[in-house]
Length: 284
Image (cartoon, rainbow, N blue to C red; front, side, top):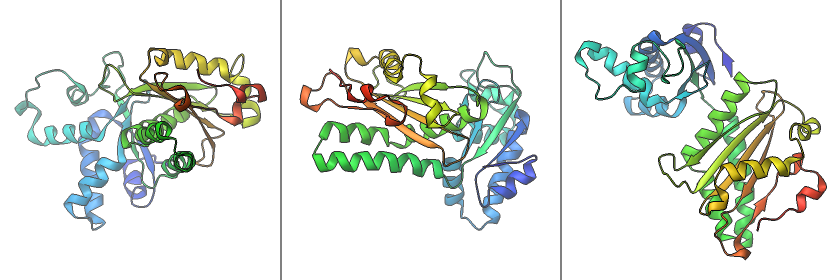
């Protein structure tokens, strides 16, 4: 990913590849306008411009690491064009925060964002290749519960969260093991899938050392935090190891819901960070 110094460099880069640039929040409307004009200049029709915008653009707060979706960025652009004085908000949400020049979170006072254009995504391909390999094996074995879990894990919103989180954690905390989790569906009190993402800026030989007491102990911690014991939720844990390149190693742990029949339960462990005795662990 190209880290542009200016908006002009960013607009040039997104014509061919992924790029990011740090801007003042007040500059979001003009930046969105520039992105749309760049896509039009490339010969895309209005429908394709809209599709590319919503598929590829994100913004990230460099201080609190919250992601801002393209819908919010587009809303800021539209509202600015209408005239801020002509728009009334029924609640003081993310769009109103940005129009006032500050982060979408109340607790964060940052006045800048990093615009991210994801373009061609080797990381998405890496994630999907990993899921598809495990899913093909499950299909060969007719493991219906595992296939259902992998289908949920490959949903667009879940993969977007995985990629966004890996990117954000790499960029903002590259000197230690950092991790973040979320339940899906996002707006349900009882999610059926909880996804965790870890970024470890070390080789696989060193990565095991970042899990005090072994990986199994860490896995037990995030399983508890995900509500696995309550039943009804499967848990996935993506682990990105190595430097910030697209070739860094990706591992996956996957634990089935506990309310499944015993012969349908499964536990997939990330072999690269497990010691031999941990690889034999089963889910009860």
